[in-house]
Amino acid sequence: WSHNTSTSARSPLDVLNVDLQSNSSYMRMVTNTNRILAGALLHVERYKNTACVNAGRFAYLYGMCRGDAASEPYGMDPVFQQGSSLFDDGSAKEDFYLDEDGLINQFGVPFGFHHHHIDGHGTGYPVMIDVNLAADRAGDWMTYLREGNYLDANVHSFSVELITYNGNFGTFT
Image (tube, rainbow, N blue to C red; front, side, top):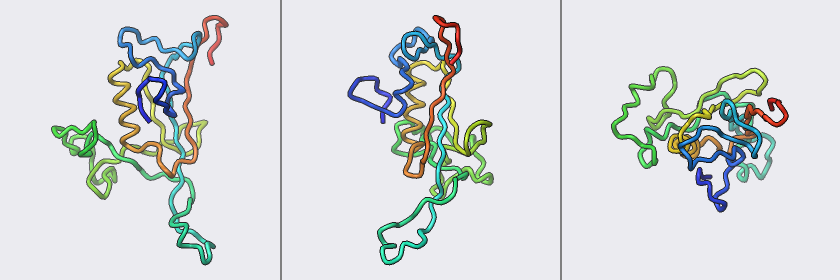
């Protein structure tokens, strides 16, 4: 998916309907009457991969099956991955991540997403995108999510939540 706002580019994040082309105003709207107040909370729930059981003579077709809910870090921080459009050769991962905390994957790249419990949500991996980001920074976040593999084959639910205010009716939604 892409942060391009043209009609030909469609993304799971297009539901935000955020005008990424304008840096002059930070008033973000959903439809014409609902103002986004705090940004977007993205939340992913994932499964662990596990060996398939009871696959019988067709076990070779399965590879891996879905197990319990995952809580391990996953994805990657594309700032530290060569080939990523966000790669920064001048950044040292040691300045941001401690390897002894299990924050670095087996290839030496920091994980991009970490489990965090939020009341009212299932076990998952939240990302908050601030409403006050300028267009270039919002685009960087979309690129980070895409190149960091936020949505992968192990995702079983993805939600976007917004706090909005409708001035016509004087209600929060």
